[in-house]
Image 1 (tube, helix red, strand yellow):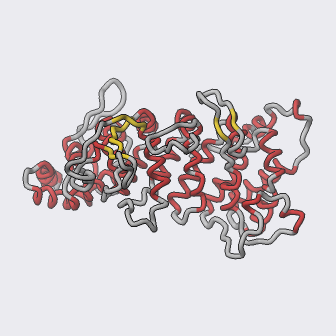
Image 2: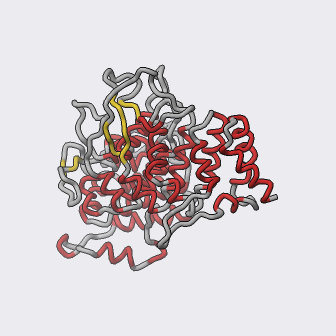
Image 3: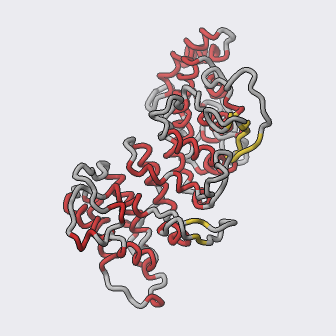
Length: 422
């Protein structure tokens, strides 16, 4: 059986497009987890140690077939989605040329299979190497002189399922940071639903990419450092990339809002950024890794809204709530996914690691929201974390100068309850 399929592999680079299509359709079932012949795709691959990364011939073919005709490219992308859960494939799929193609393909609004490309990028960035590579990656783009469709054309996206704007399109290429462009595309893809010209993909899985990036210290620094991209208008204020993700904590798609929730939580591991995270945009803060002041991100309303339900508060408690959480409609629904509810509660716990963060939460009605949430919560793990948060917020505080490091020591005293990056 193995020898028969190896013969089929040879047709993946056949000159006949129909032969490539049939071969791709036949080998796709072999790529799923649990397939007894899945190891054929990793035969001869090397990764790590003193040896440089090398592809097997079939992996090289799959990467090239992502540029083929629609049916063939669809199966090639899907095969890489299935196979990219293996660490052996991460170096191959994050090498500069293919990474530039994947990112450029996602960025092009006309790319038919951009959602599958997002899944590939999501899978490979679960490993630290591809995260570092993506943080360094730059993309060649040509700005549109008239600003139609989008602000630029990513030149390396060109293939059968990602056509250029027009045959006579010309311009001067320039380099832009890949992650800045991906965040802009992610934010804009959720606002095009009622417009006449839409992206072909929804790009929800980019949220998982940002969550993966935020597990790396360099990734958190990128998300919290104000930067300007080709998509930034002259009138727009330069903001931290994380600010573009905040509106999606209540998005209808679970993947999108889940990835954003994890990204916010991971950024809260940067203790020096807590004041910027909790303060309004009108305030600015100096962070050790940022070259310019960081405007406030005001994340608290975005974290609390998914935890709030339709319950009514008495007037005294209502006055404690943030304006965004006052007088919510009777149709308001609390986050249905228990993992995401837990993620938001863990975010609030991380913001309790400083006295300032605890005081802000006390003044913002966090306890009142969490108290009503506790009344309907059924997940034991979430309940445990709610009770930890309540203990943090309702306990008596020592004089401020005597509390340095006390919370961190308390958190580290119980390894089973330690909050981890996700």
